[in-house]
Structures are given as structure tokens and as C-alpha cells.
Image 1 (cartoon, helix red, strand yellow):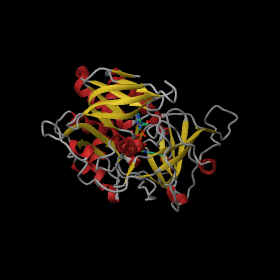
Image 2 (tube, helix red, strand yellow):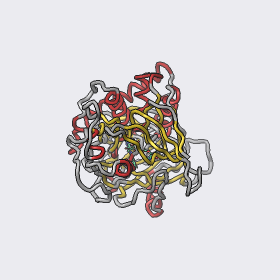
Image 3 (cartoon, helix red, strand yellow):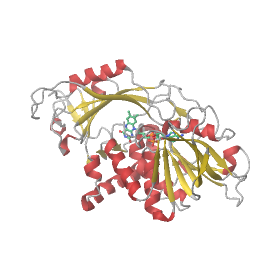
Image 4 (cartoon, helix red, strand yellow):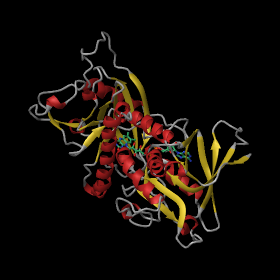
Length: 428
Ligand SMILES: Cc1cc2nc3c(=O)[nH]c(=O)nc-3n(C[C@H](O)[C@H](O)[C@H](O)COP(=O)(O)OP(=O)(O)OC[C@H]3O[C@@H](n4cnc5c(N)ncnc54)[C@H](O)[C@@H]3O)c2cc1C
């Protein structure tokens, strides 16, 4: 059965960092003058890559990603402002996220012990190492991504944003002028397989912020569109353990061992007493269906466990625990929303491009359909900036940063294969 809900709302598809930070900025800007609804396929917001990422906020981008430095700095400064506000007003940001500036380090082999004192207690150390405190650039901060999710979800709810979880958007209704009119959603576990419970939400704008599922959903919703969102598979298998050392502000840190072992390996200790690790990229794993998690490769998790045994200071006696074991608390696989260009899309889809013809009645080409996707390895960093810029775009205001680099039809290729698994290497 199809039910009709209220009109004139803005729907966000996806409750990861991109959907939530855009909704947060939009709600801050417009208060209760608009009704924002976030529709999330998982049973909880911040369940996919956004909660299972390393937690570095940084913009020391190099090579082909230098084009992202402006957006990176803009976003980094917005996160720093939230931290400042938190100390002034105790809005909970620092308490929940464990935000700690200048906390990303890289181990360099063949050194003489320079900078070793920067390392947190939970890292084993060798006097033949040096520590590079600019491994991710001069401007860094660490957060616990789960805490970021809790914080930003609460901000949205406090601002009146409605969040529906366990609900998947499956269809969109356009007017004859190619302007969005409504989205159709399916609630998980209702209606039975042959008769799913469908809800229709009338809306004037919709944002596709579905992380790695965005290209597939776009193609499903707009099969005739000449726009093909080109992406690469880029997954990361991760594991986490209890931190053997007591949790203090100084234990929140990122430590990269990439230069020791010759491939990506990073540990991140959080304000919840855990240490998280992720190793080499998986460029072939198929994306699971919407709202489903993928299982990690057991051999990769074993490898991470062996690395943890080697590099984490399990013998640390500073915690008042007598017996300690190396035990994996949880593990998983997360997918980066990686565009082929390496650049995100922060754009409205011009109305003729939704179907390959037609235009809005007012001749503006405004379709009310927006895409905020493709933040790859840097969605947590770039989320707050992208969210604010997207909220300005949706409000038809001048954006703080020129978005032509991130606009559909600009540098983003319109045509070509929209499948994944191209095997192109990631950037981080
Ligand atoms: C191992 C790893 C480490 C990382 N480390 C960092 C880091 O240190 N710093 C950094 O800045 N970035 C990092 N990233 C990147 C960052 O995690 C991502 O760029 C970011 O989380 C993407 O956010 P998102 O909101 O676009 O996607 P997601 O977090 O994937 O959220 C998208 C949401 O959309 C929902 N959805 C999809 N389709 C539908 C539908 N049809 N209906 C309803 N809901 C739908 C999904 O269920 C999902 O919850 C890392 C990523 C990985 C995998």
C-alpha cells in the first residue's frame, strides 16, 4: 500500500557523514522553515564507511589531489570551529569525538630516535626510528568516527531533522518538467517479500548522499540519464582491540607504519579505549546490496592481528589490569565512495540530464535533484565543508568556494562505464 506524507520537504538519501553534515548545515541555516528528512537503509545512521574509517581529519593532499586542498582547508577549519564551540559551550563535540589536533604520526625506519616522545604509550618503539609528525601534512586532527556520528545525529535531531532508519529509497517521481516531486521508500522487514510496504514522501529537493551505493542508485532512479557516475571499488578490511593503556586525551592518535612495512598500515586509538587498524586496500571486493554489510577477509584480519601483536605495546603495565590478551573486539569491511577522477561531486543535476531531455518550466534547469558523493578516502575530513557548500547550493546562494571543479558537466566525465572494479589504485 502506498501512503502519502507531507509536501514540500527535503529528502536526504543516506545517513553517513555526507548526508548528515549537509542536513545539519541546511537545518542550521533555515531553522524550522523547511522540513528535512533523512532516509537511511541501515538500522542506524553512520553505519557504513563513515563509522568505520580511521578518523583522520587532514588536507595535506599531494599529486592529483592538490585540487582538493581548498575544500580540505575549508572543511578542516569548520571542524576546528566545532571544537572551539565545544570548549566554549560544551555542545559535546570534543567529549563525544575525542577531537585532538596535531595527532597524526608516521614511523620512519633507519632513524636515531627523533620525535619518539611524540608517540602515545600504546605504540612499541625502537630507538632506530624517527617519528614524522607531518605524515598527513601540517594540519591534522584525530576523532573517533563513531563519536562524530553520535554528535552529528544529535545535532540534526535537535534542529528538527527527521531521521528514518531501516528504510531504502527505491524510486523517484519527476514532473513533466523533470523536477523532483516525490521519492518512494521501502521499509525493511515490513509487508513481506511479495508486498513490500511502500511510503511516498513528497518533496521539493532530494540529495543523493548514498556513499558507494550512489552510482547504482542514480542509474536505477534515472535510467535514461546521460550522466554516468564513474567509480572504483576501494574497500578496507579493519579490526579493533582494547587499548592496553589507559585512555587520556594524548592516547587519541593515528600512527602509520606504512614506511616500515612498505604498504598501507595504520593504527588509530580512540577516546572509547579501543585501537583500530586498517591495512592494504581491496580493489576487487564487490559492493554488497544496499543496507547490508560485507564480511572481511579472515586472512587479512589475521594479518592485522599479527601486526597489532608486533607493534602495539601489549606489555603496557600502566592500566590496572593484571591479565591482558590480544583479542579482536570487532572487525569488518568498509567501502570508500571513490570516484574515478578522485574528486567528489557537489552538484545539482540539470533537469534535462535526468532523462536526457526536457527542462524545468521556468527555464532554469533546476531539477531539485542533488548529488553529494565521491569523497573517497577523505569523506570524514571533507564532509563538513561539502555539507555546508551543498546547503548553500540548495539554498540558491553564492557558495563560499567555487564549485565548478565538483559540478556535474564540469570536470566530471559525463559518459562512460559506470561499473566498478577497475582496479585503479587509491590515493592515500
Ligand atoms: C578503511 C577506511 C578508512 C578511512 N579513513 C578516513 C579518514 O581517516 N579520514 C577521512 O576523511 N576519510 C576516511 N575514509 C573515507 C570516509 O570514510 C568516507 O569517504 C565517508 O565515510 C563517506 O561518507 P558517505 O556519507 O558518502 O558514505 P557512507 O558512510 O557509506 O554512507 C552512505 C549511506 O547511504 C545509505 N544508503 C545507500 N543507498 C541508500 C538508499 N537507496 N536508501 C537509503 N539509504 C541508502 C547507506 O546505507 C549508508 O549508510 C576512510 C574510509 C575507509 C573505508
